[in-house]
Image (cartoon, rainbow, N blue to C red; front, side, top):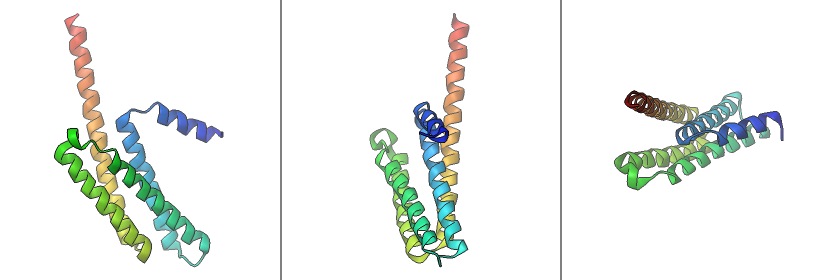
Length: 141
């Protein structure tokens, strides 16, 4: 195992649920940017065609996974809305792959960036609430 692999493994193992979700968004965004770059450079080389399809596949797999782990009972309407978004993005990435459409990929990246920011806000709010609870507990002692 390389140093990079060890680092990534320790980062994933030490992450909480919200961090893992944002890591998945990050990885999907990276994959989409690589796929977009392959299309922009031109798909005249088989390696670029393979890279584009492979990276779009990675992003699609991440979206399937994010959809699968949604807690629809506790998440209610928000979980259902996320499911619709993930399903729509997956369909759009299939179209982007078929038609080598950079605009679709860019729109998907924008949506994923916005979702990632929302999850990061949730994480920040949860941390602030946790800190407030700790201060209240410490003040009660």
